[in-house]
Length: 414
Ligand SMILES: Cc1ncc(COP(=O)(O)O)c(C=O)c1O
Image (cartoon, rainbow, N blue to C red):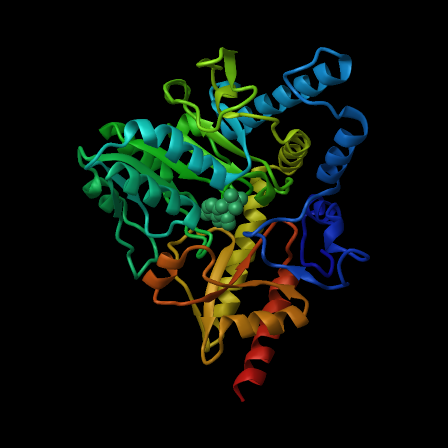
């Protein structure tokens, strides 16, 4: 074990693979604790982007020359790789989008416009990110449907499964649920909730933005209808994400955006549409970014979930123990088994001020509403300071963070 406190040599090596964490790109000793916003990228991902533009650049699904054929082969190969990463039954269930937000909007527009009728209900947890809330608000307004929110248990900061069962009625058409809260790290029992949806014929959508890099996902086993995630939160590039859609449901959906590549044949007045997934990928897709996503998935695969989860659970437990020892800190609650995200308040200080002082001490942390305003209000907070871990964070960083927090708080309040 070295000064980082990491005993696993493979993790220590993985940490070294992120150039943005080390000089000359970062100051010696700076710490990245804002990983729920976006993660840094390992060399492998950066090299995949560079290799694409240097040696493989061509548009996909169009031309027959060697470079273009190879680009298409690689692109579709990555779709198969993503399908196995997310547990899809086949690769046509994987739609490349710009990210979680776009994936959810795609469902709200394409599925929502044909399946949600006046009087229908859309069920949501109280802990949704705005990306899994605002698209449903807009759909409900358009379709004269209604949003229903599950109650938050203020003691645990979670949602009881019996509340999910109790909320289901013939009016409920969709349950859109976050897997892991980006505010508290609460990890919802989505397997149970999706089971309830399936028993009652309710369509389920999982927002996996905060889980795809931290927990194994198996869409077919879970039995969800839709699942959305973003590559940039999984050590991959910005500008690409995934919508998993169960085959039958995607086949029955009309297109969302329209243009090139999403059509089978086009006449002056009308067109016929391609089959999924291409029906939902109008225009030129993010080709280089998809290559980067493949590299990110390979990177995660080389480490393995057991190693990643053990490490991140230990970090979050250490953070909870140390923060719990500070009498001026109130940690926003989450049920046991939370992921590597902790938000908290510190007495007599504003989270924004603390974040600014922590920045000068070398810590990148986020203060604010975390794109989950109603959830923060439900937790009785206006704003909170959040730390969120990635596989490259270390026990030594957590210890130093809490020491600095104590020092800064003392200086701000005396
Ligand atoms: C839970 C959750 N859902 C959705 C999103 C939106 O992701 P993106 O901005 O990559 O579309 C985020 C981003 O922070 C998130 O944390």
